Image (tube, rainbow, N blue to C red; front, side):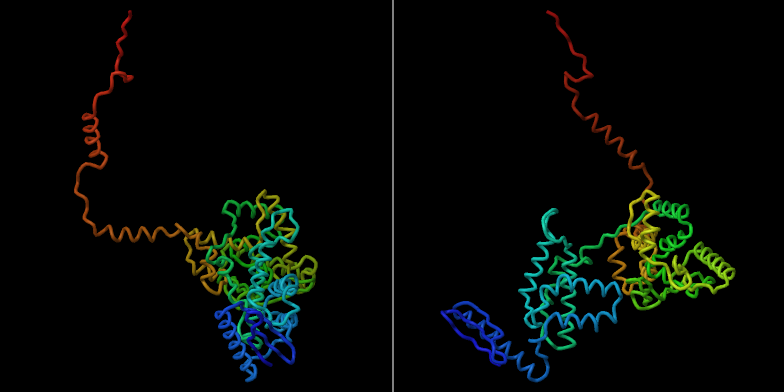
Length: 435
């Protein structure tokens, strides 16, 4: 293993040999400055090789990115992330990252190549309609690099296959700032629209109207609503404990923890407490008549109500889409009912901390980033309190004419001092001479 700086035809080169074959050949240009840069690069590589010899860094020359990424997804991501996150990471790897970086070694992934990859993907995203090539949003390209950066971070911090992450500098700033800095746009329903949707649900799908109303009234995620069990309700105190989230993936039911991996108590309106308690009584009576035990799921499946909860995709396509159609309103995502709950609460002046607790956000920064613009003007009483506190120490104004009355004499004085109208004014009679 050797690293040499050589000069050929006036140009300075850096050449590295491993196991008798050349693994690196880089040109730095001509002149003394190019020679200094090449020497600095050689010194950096020498330091890296010494760290490898001491066992501080595992050489990654023969570790292909495809092999490492497959193991990273299987051992690091799959056990600790939700099914949706794993599917998203796998899709971005399969369709975009592996075709570009899969065949090459980890330490051959350099920032210039990542930069060229980003530029090509962004140009594809900006292609006009009708032109050949896939259409990708800018956020999708940012997500590709986020997955690549996370994978290479693990290679640096845990496995020690790399000394630094070549994708570290291609973060949110590189793409023009994060969505947190620009602000996120969420779509919501206004209160009259919510009332119209609930009325339509009660008219056309009465057995699912309570589910939709609960989403509007609590801000639960859809998977959290469908994962509710009767033991989660506290009808005496008027709240429900959100402990799990469910979804059906490739025909298999997956019961997982909540997104934040912790349970939370969510307050219920009195109407919801009454209706859920009544629904449980009805379900218990139906189960007793049928000679079976009560299903633990509050929102049971259509095909297997005793063992499975309702499928989210079925609720979205067969119920929610048709409710929006019958109501004659634009169809937002079912998840936007959660945004609607938060925004309407903040407009009514409810504390940001309370909304955060109800939604289950780990940090209040997430709540502020998403919904702070809905609170503008909702707490004007605080501005009035400050103004009142200051103004009560000011001396009372002396009794006298009102500002309107004092303005009238000044206006009359200005009018009396104005010049007379010209001779051809409409109010001045004109003399006509006939010849």
